[in-house]
Length: 416
Image (spheres, rainbow, N blue to C red):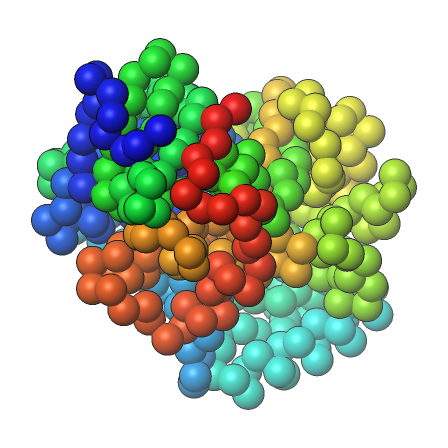
């Protein structure tokens, strides 16, 4: 199939596939730069991971020599501030800091070494003993040994932020089209130009194509004969009913970070930093916050599973862990649970940039559990690359050709 061959063709300069926070950010910046942009989302904007996560931000500063991670996090943090305070979007943004709680001597030693390493690199992170930890987060258990404090940490409503990017993209002329599930992709016989067919039989074409499909990147890439090594990792969360303010920071626990440092347990077919390995739990993971309306939301498990129903045993284990840290939660029953999928790569390295062998084909995926925190800046860097033709040097660490391979000749075109 040649690009633009069908009569009901909808043409634009750039097509973005994916209405999560990374895709909407890319569309926003491209539209701001004057490009004719159409974004297609199979469901609703922020309907998947970008609207289902905890909204926690673990920023540590730019660092003496900014890395890709610190640039993505801090750049995104500045965007959240801009949207909240300059563009007047109500995002529930609050920069009250983040804490990772320490429960054992081994965790304390690990945290101490981690803080020492980060501070020598110019990052803002502090080690607090038990008394200081309870001073800044009074509801902590008397049994905790301390915490790692992230003074620049923050929280916000992830769905509101994703929708704000979409709204601003539209204000700058982009078309944002939810409810458009892609069934076929093809590139022109000369390797340039792309045709996208959706479930309604509608056909879109563009000179430039951006794949920003999150946890579904592998399936979307396969439509063009690409192997995008992205794993759909299920995270799950639970929430209480609204209650009086008890948590003043985004919260987490050191337990999983220490375990993954000692035993990453990943492979070419399984990503790093899962809570379950070969059918068994290996560690507990915990994060969450108290929302503006008083609801407390907590999450944890990371599993390779295509089941959309949260695992009750996992929810129970996570709830028990949260009660160890914050005993008042024993009196607050779980009101609801939910699950969503995150786009992990085998070694947790993001994929951001141009695909070799194709003309003007770009991809943004693999932000693992940091999509909310890093997606906006990742979208800007990709938009800058598309607009100028030059990739920021930091994107070398996320070059798609480090991980992506072609399953077939790029000119073939695939449908499925």
